Amino acid sequence: MAEMQRYNCIMVYSAAGDKLLFCKRLKDPYQGKYNLVGGKAEPGEDGFAAAYRELAEETGITDEDITLSHMMDFAYYNQECIVEIYVGTLERDVKLKTELHPLCWLSSEKEDFFDLEKFAGEGNIGHMIQQVEIYGKGKECRVFAR
Image (tube, rainbow, N blue to C red; front, side):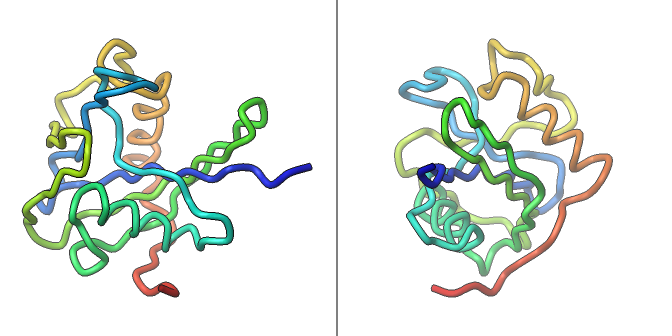
């Protein structure tokens, strides 16, 4: 069996903790919907290294601005991929740098993240946010092999 492709989704909370960072998808999948930032891990790339790399590429946020925790994974055997979920809170306000999809902050308290017309992921974003609220962020890692 071939190795499954690995992707990451990164939940970035504002420094105040009241907002979450999203991108508005310009293309499929999920064109026109809000999604978390993230991307594809390279073969053999450490999960944390891939998450920090994708975060920096898509937003300009670096490992000096945030400490990520590996919270959970979704294994999609029918699509031959694994999506690793990382979460962190900014340590300071940052100026965002958009790579492709426009970035925006949405209230972590006022949105219905299970709204399938507005958000990507078939309800998984809502589930992930509930997991953070109930169980916390998971195992942190700032230092990784570059």
